[in-house]
Length: 110
View: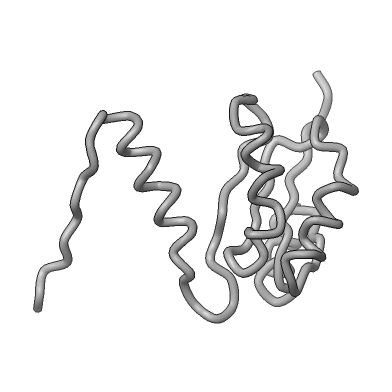
């Protein structure tokens, strides 16, 4: 069985943190750089690809094109500058697909 790889595409500060975990890091400050990094990958060699929210828009269509494949698993992560909501939207859609209905999660005031 061949050794699968893991990659992260995104801002250098956010993506670089994954280097110590064994991820290959592809710095991308803007969506166009993320697209260039993605197209340079040999997708079949990766089990996991993380993409920061800030640059996800540049690879959104490419991720959708492989969404039915078991690998690689592609996950959107928060990067520097806080949450953009892309990751939460994807989780919400997955839950809705699995359950057949949307689930509303409310934060309690405290």
